Amino acid sequence: MKTIIYTLILLSLNTHAVCTQEFQRAFFDTNSKRLSSVVDDLALKGVGKKIVVKGPFKLSGEIKINTAKNAYLPILTSVILSDKPVHLYDLPKISDVNKLKIILSELGVTITEKGNVTTFDSSTLKTNMAVCDMVTKMRASILFLGPLIARYGAGKVALPGGCPIGARPIDLHLEGLKALGVNFEEGDDFVQGIGKFNSLVGSDISLYFPSVGATENIMSAAILAKGETIIRNAAKEPEIDDLMDFLNAMGAKISWIGDGVMKIEGVSELKEVHYRAIGDRIEAGTYVLMGLMSRSHVKISGFNPEHLGDALNVLKMMGANMKVGPDYIEVFPSQLRPVDVTTLPHPGFPTDMQAQLMALLTTVEGQSKITETLFENRFMHAEYFNKLGADITVEGNKATINGKENFVPNKVVATDLRAAAALIMMASRIEGVTEIHDVKHLFRGYSDILEKLEEQGVDIKMINE
Image 1 (cartoon, rainbow, N blue to C red):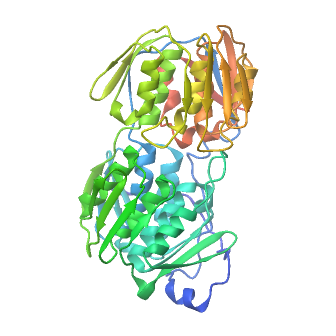
Image 2 (image 1 turned 135 degrees about the vertical axis):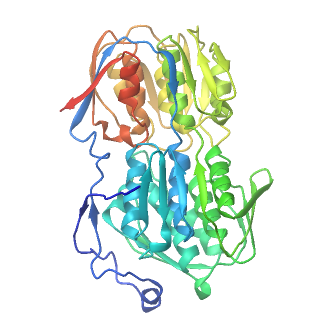
Image 3 (image 1 turned 120 degrees about the vertical axis):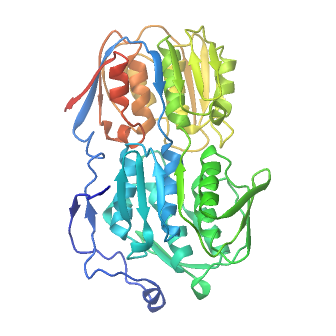
């Protein structure tokens, strides 16, 4: 077993705001100096690089899916709830996971690796302030807020960043935690909270929107609250169920008691746990759509197809020739039909597959439409699809796609994580070389995607700009 040592740039803490005396008493830090900047090698993987793909190409054989990024992110922020060891299996090798591991290490968590098992020991936690620069580089870091307050009665988190696909306000996170008895102070670049009497009390909470992040933050905090918590209109994504299973394995008492209604009975102690997250439904969906777009016969395995929700129904409506098993989808060359789709919270069509679906629809004869209801800036990729020869018109949150057969190679830009994968899909139907620039987002969500495609015989490589 080896202790993971991350590359750290030691800098003095750039304090985000002067706290009130009340909040100063609530926060602790065993270091006289704090780390305000760290280096994430995986995040640097695509910086200053471009991906060059020679098409057309097809997929074949079997592609195995990794564990889910969106399942492991809230699990990783929740390891600090307990002072007992947490053993996680098959963490995906992506920059978002790497960032959270670096933040956890900086908070004082001891991280060790042995084979495919990563162990987190939070008994060595030395601060309840997640305020380093790395926190600001990813949106999932806001999920530290609930667990820090639950364990220590107080927590401070720098306001996070992430993919440029629109505003993602944290008001639902804060309102839910306020209902558990937390008082907040907000600055321009931080938020900090303290529980009444340094503890949390169960409550009946109704969300006006089924926010995934807010549901995760509230349920993680509520497991250590006194009494019972009810979350109404909770998010129902498979990753919520997976977080529930993980927390219950730690000793929490969480259950569904109705459609979108979750009950959490507070406990006073958690236990050691071994856990492996579900397969990544978005990664799986990406390869399924890539197989259909390239008119391939390929098997995508290692995930639960039911987790795709309405995406699976959309593909059936389009006439996709598929064999669906308990942990795989096998796709065959298909004559597809146009379709109208609206992105919605689960079990609706996932916004994280919208760009990939748009890419597929550019090749489907007839007119298709996509309405994006979740993020206001998530059609930025359409401009670059058009540079490759697609016929897409965007008006507000609606995109109209006129399918066609012929596309042209060009230089394009990956505007976000899913758009990067969708541009690789587009290259599967282009005779010639497609250059995809600004690919740093790709490695936030796809583990070994270049290696997987190279194994498929795809002529794809990443080179300097």
